[in-house]
View (cartoon, rainbow, N blue to C red):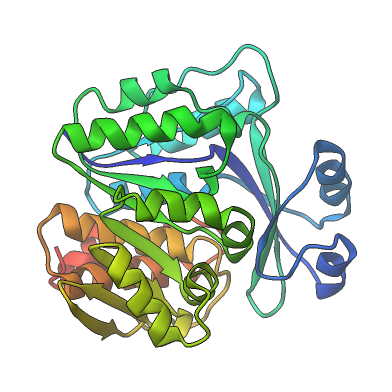
Length: 328
C-alpha cells in the first residue's frame, strides 16, 4: 500500500532568472501561475535566458518529496510519447515514485511550465498544459490498485472537464479503501478562476485535509482577515493547514488552531515548490500517525530545503534531516 498517491499535471519545468520587465511584458501577474497557449509559450521560451530543465508539476513535486522523506509514493498524470514525456517519466521514477502512466500516442504534447525567477526569489509561471489536462480513469485504476493511506489532489486539476472523471474516481476509490483525501488550493489565480468548483468539492464533504497559502485562503473564503479565513476553512474540512511564507504555518484540527514557525533558511534562492514540499512533509507525518504540529514541522523542513536552491525538488537527504530533528 502506498502512503500517498498524488494526482495532477505532469509538467516539465524550465526555470530561468529574469527581470521584472520580462514578467510584465507577458501580462502574467507576478508570483502567480498563468496559462498560455503553445505559441505564446514558444515566444516566452525564446526570450528567456539560459534555463534549467527538470520535471515538475505541483502534485508530482509533492510525490517526489514524499519519496525523499522515505514514504511510499505514486503519481497519476498524463504525458505524450515525446521527448519531454520521456524526461518526465524517467525523472519521477528515478526519484523513487511509482508512475504507471502510459504515454499517449496522439493529442497535445507533454505539458511544460516556464518559471521566471526574479531577483527577489519570487517565481512567476507561464504554463502550457498540453496533454497534462487529459488524465483518464485507467491511469487512476492502475495507481490505486494496491490501495493508499492518502490521495493528494492538485487543485489545478479541479475544474478541468477532461480530468473530471479521473478526480472523481480517485476520490471514490480512496474512500472506498479506507483512505483519506487531501486537496491543495494551488494558486490564488486558480481559486479566482475555479472557486465554485473547489467549493463544490470541499463543501460536498469529499476532503479530509486541505492545504492553502494565505492568499488562497482569503480568496477562497472571501474573508479579509486571515484569522477569519482559517476559521471558515476549519468549519468545512477536518484538518486545514495554511502557509504564510517566512512567518510559518497555521494548523487547524479537532477544534483547535496552532502556529508552527518556518524552518530557518540561510538564503532563499527560489520559492518554486515551497508549498509542494510543505505538503509532502505534512502528508508523510499524517501517514506516520504524527500529531498536527509534527506534520507541520516536517512540512517546514522540506519547504526550507527546496527554497535554498533553484528548482522545485529536493537536493538534500530529507529523510536524514528529519531523523536528525526527531521528526521521523
